[in-house]
Length: 286
Image 1: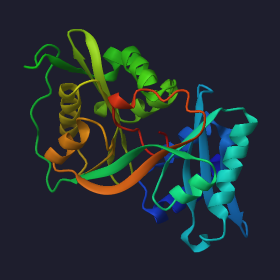
Image 2: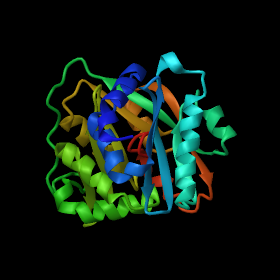
Image 3: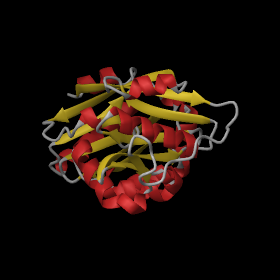
Image 4: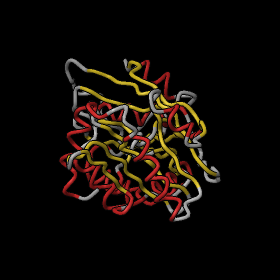
């Protein structure tokens, strides 16, 4: 895949009803230009797959799309096998992805195992009213102060590396630049307890990653995001077994949309801290 193929990729994601933008394709191509692939039928792009490598600890496979008119011909499997071949040639010890129910049997046949379950939750707001003001440092009654990324960038990235399992600072900086108003870091008594970023997708604002070490921080981050997001539709890919996030989303009016399964192939030597992970960045990036 090259930059010239992005319009074709956008066509396929529109057919699938996905939320990604041109910037998401560009992030893959910037991070791993040799690891993004298209399949062509009669000279036209009929499928895509993209990979991104995180610190040589593990790689992500995402943007696996096939034109509905060409499904059932093995194109998706061929793209996956090409992506796996590319990553094996680079001696990446582990590959991860988030599978839809339809894709999960295919991934299992290729050697992927289940790590944990994710649910897409969505919120549709008929009207947006100004929410309560976000507390300044030291002003919150529960002593949780909310900052933007600039004030706590290093702490945010360090916490993400611990929780995600590898460094992805370049990707998160790109996401933060794309929607700086939707970045929040929660601190209590000088210690960072969580953070949240978001992307402004083609269909909805997508909250993630949403990371918190306790329920109070998780709630504060969600409240802050819902105040700052001005889109009528919001998506969150929440970990089903997180102790706080599903209940917080339900209390805020979110509804179940679909399931995803986090899967891995190889040795999962760097699982991170999923107990701190409320919601992932997205199925395309992890």
